[in-house]
Image (cartoon, rainbow, N blue to C red; front, side, top):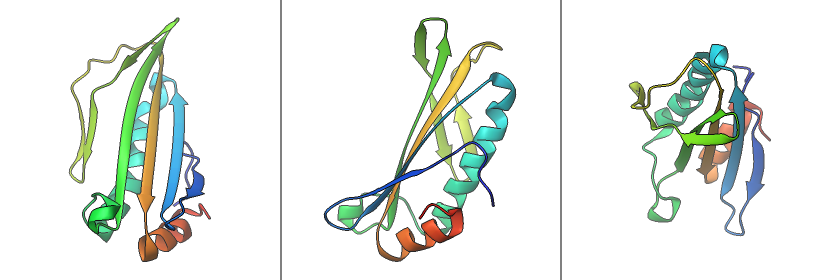
Length: 121
């Protein structure tokens, strides 16, 4: 699946764990499409196993943050993801850009498969 909104930057730590960081900023019109794309990526990851601390033996983990940008201020968006979908407890206005920051980390076979599937190598 091609990615239109999320462009991942790759890094690797000294232990060989891979990390992909993406930051997307969209107008309200494109918010649902961005969330659908992020859901596709995270659902693929969840199909590989439960997320959790790599040091505890999990094969992948993620960090997700969202912000609303209006004029000269930013406001956090209370956004959570589960394999069943998104939960947003923040009422979003029809104005302002919406930013999504997604970090995925993985090790071993997961890292290789992620890079191959999402063309992030």
